Amino acid sequence: MSEQAEQANEDRRKYEFRKVIEELTEYEGSGTQLVSIYIPEDKQVSDVVAHVTQEHSEAANIKSKQTRTNVQDALTSIKDRLRYYDTFPPDNGMVIFSGAIDAGGGQTEMVTKTLESPPQPIESFRYHCDSHFLTEPLEHMLTDQGLFGLIVLDRREANVGWLKGKRIEPVKSASSLVPGKQRKGGQSAQRFARLRLEAIDNFYQEVAGMANDLFVAERHELDGILVGGPSPTKDEFLDGDYLHHELQDKVIGKFDVAYTDESGLKDLVDAGQEALADQEIMQDKRLMETFFENLHTGEEATYGFEQTRRNLIMGSVDTLLISEDLRSDVVIYECPNGHEEYEVVDARHSTPDHECSECREDAEVQEREDVIEHLMNIADQRGTETTFISTDFEKGEQLLDAFGGIAGILRYSTGV
Ligand code: ZN
Image 1 (cartoon, helix red, strand yellow):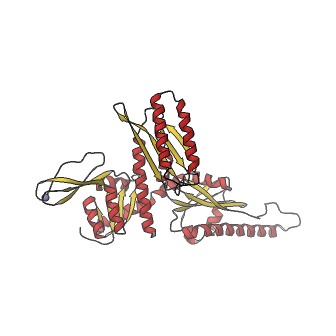
Image 2: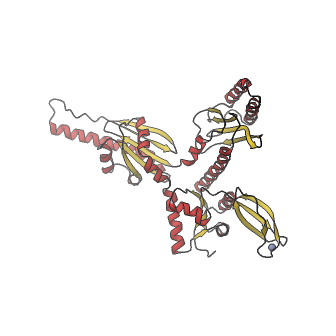
């Protein structure tokens, strides 16, 4: 699969996840009877079955008969689901939700959902029983995108690693032979100072080498680099241009951190929160800037469902921009004379009647589907990249409010 196709696939998966999660968060159990199980990829399925069986027998002690029955039913359907898996769960693990949800009017309804291979690995096994499904860990995986390089250093020690979403991965460390400030007797002060500077310079080169080895190959995927340490070490390191010049350009901030061991990487991420948040919507901001420029100066922009769809089919859309908060369906109608027409409706509303705009006959509903899936399917076939745009900045909000949440940057002007 090409890199772009992989990215599109990933975006689609994320969108599908987000939809399921939104649905799950709306459910409520009448007691603590909604079960969520998070299973890491290295957890044996047989262990999970054993755990669920154990919970099932413990649930026999629940006093309320209804709650007891509901919990046991949920656990039974989870066991049924687990039968589909061999030794281990799929890559990155999986999550199973099951329980009797409040369906209104004193009625309950059994719901069971499995989410396989989330965007980031599930780190630990969790069994959770509550009046709500536990969705936060998955939500975190979806909101925190991005790949960042981390470097912490002082003159004695350095660590480099990754920040992938919310996860910090320490990768390499080094310690220096830089002598302390006290010189030994018999050494000339000048010579001592020179040797010390040389040792510091060597160490900075070593740290830069470590960072280059790790980050240069990923520089196109890298959203930024954070550098931490005490003053003036990190400043000397950056001002001395030790890093590969392309990495140097990726540095989005330097921060004071006290420790330069692995825990320093975590301190660095904490200190850099604001810079990271800005960076996350940076790509969205750039894309929306391009869209508005194209809209004002030329014709290489499209927006709204109909127009964007037509351009997508022509293959003229370079990047499809979809608002993260768009929740709409497209309804496909056909009139008795065979005219096909589309209407976009709020996903929560029922399907409206439709009159054909050409012959004024009443049209019948052919199909109703998620508008994003509809457009992404066309985009996939035409090699168009789809990007979800956050509403956390002004132009992102405008995409949703003024352009119906759908727009595109075109490869060339089509006049459509
Ligand atoms: Zn018609």
